[in-house]
Amino acid sequence: MSSSGGPAAPERTAIIDAAAIAQNVGTIAEYVRPAKVLAAVKADGYGHGMLTAARAALAGGADWLGTAHVAEALQLRDAGIDAPVLAWLHTRQTDFAAAIAAHIDLGVSGWELTEITAAAQRLQSPARIHLKIDTGLGRNGSTLDQWPALIRQAQWAQEEGLISVVGIFTHLAVADEPDRRDTDQQLETFRAALQTAEDHGIVPDLRHAANTPAALSRPDAHFDMVRVGVGIYGQSPFADRSAESLGLVPAMELRTTLANVKHVPAGQGISYGLTHRVDTPTTLGLVPLGYADGIPRIAVGAPVLIRGRRYHSVGRVAMDQFVVDLGTDTEAQVGDEVTVFGGDSGISAAEWGAAAQTINYEVITRIGARVPREVINESAVQPAEALQ
Image (cartoon, rainbow, N blue to C red; front, top):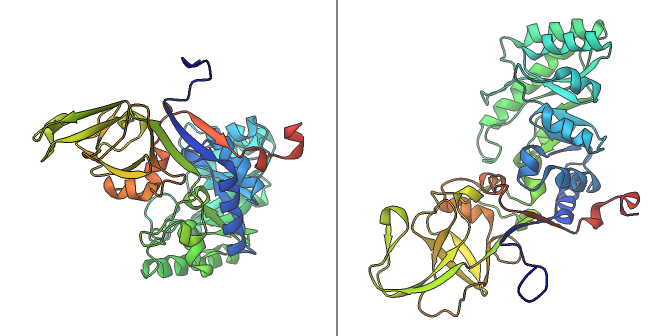
């Protein structure tokens, strides 16, 4: 309880707007129709909370959910979410049997197929798989040289009743730069890989290649389904286009309050390394968020909003705090609300990304567990029976 007798406000909060996630999914779904939409809720829903993101995405019209790891997909099942789920990044420790038993679709790049078919044989239950071809990104996925052999192995396993090839997919490397020819080349390679599969009698229901930027800029990449991540959280995947211009609503607002305000003389150094000194007497505000909370240590001159005015960070971000220069013309006081990004602040996660030489994806996903999530508008995306 606070000293006034009311409930104490959180010291720091990431406010998650569930309705915004649902709205963003609906916006993207309308754009890519008739292609289906897979909403990526991996990495704890890009920092928004996996279950919150999953339920909101489904309410907004998502057909599928996507996770990197089977362990994440199993958490969705444990929470009672029975929508189609695809998990695509595996290790030797991945529990394929648990995934098959929970009706989780599995991405297959090569070596996994042997282990998945063995698990399916033990369970006497076929696995649902999506074969992945590396068309140029150079991460996961079968190489072009290995693809025919993988197709033949999948053909055999499907004929034996051990698997069902539900999908074939790839991932694009530079779709966020729409003018680059690399995406055209990747799509050509993908179509050729699909033809190879068809020649061996494998014609899946779902061909999917598009991520958020391709979903929004490359209709020729939509195929049967798009896999969207950052876009459903209201973030633009493009360096030169805002979320607002794409019809997307940021779903995370990061807030705290000023922990200290003090006047300092000219020449005052700021934070570790004294990488910044003030030129004139000024007022400094202390923001109680640091790199332990996910604030990028490398950020320089990053914006915040206090009392309706923008200020900028100075000096190095520390583990638990960073400093903003409030100038001399300020009425800021200890306890004043600080919006780091999101909400009605006019400050985007992309601006923090630019200040930290990174991207908005990293900024939102790295907000740590020490920052409580407060979900708003959750009732707007809950099925009626969940509210009784």
